[in-house]
Image 1 (cartoon, rainbow, N blue to C red):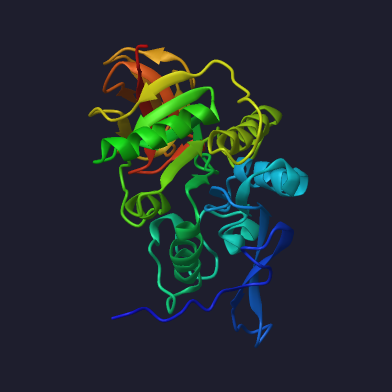
Image 2 (tube, rainbow, N blue to C red):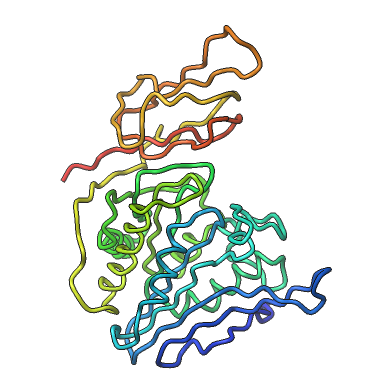
Length: 333
């Protein structure tokens, strides 16, 4: 059975030469606006025939490096600089971005677990459906920016997934390396169901993602990494002229067992290893101190494996089931 058409309508042409700023308009009737709409900003820059890149940020609303880099690119990029087309959506999940939350405040749905979406579903499902059925098929390469948000912090990395098709994986790895983040991560997701990543890769597109620090804010350094990476991806795709801007990058991997550490109690976290530092298997990684009684020893969480601390829980308070840490292997040249 065929799906109904998407209710989302772009206010600008998606296939016209030049530079166009506008919105994806999603009708949304609510108490304060009976015939209202959700307006998701979008920019399309096109110059003749050539590859198409889809660049997205704000998949989660508390992650800022992507939106910063893409707002800058939408402002700065001129049609005469490119060959082909660049579709820029800095605030993919606009309701979540405006609320500063990971998931949408309108329906409580995590956009990055809602794909392929539904054209007749909730607000977030409608957004997912439009991106995967309308925008992604136009693209040759897709870059989706992420960072740790309010609950995680990472060393800054671009990422490519382990895929069944070696040629497809090689394309994604090449794009990841072109992004040239300080770290280049090969990974398998702990929960890939409903992810934008998976849906895009299932369509055979070249796809890369990022995790660039976190904590629910951005820094000068993190914004520079994102801005440079976006332009490097366009150069790699043959859309933007010029040489890649490169610097040192360390290859890391989280495909082995034991990379992820999860909390089995609640309490206050005391890190014993900082991001980017090496740790040996069995060495103390962090303490979880009780918050209901003094004089009691903490629960010390050991490292499941040796490697580099690539990710960690950000808030000081830990709940059972929280991801505490991610230890990555450094890949030898």
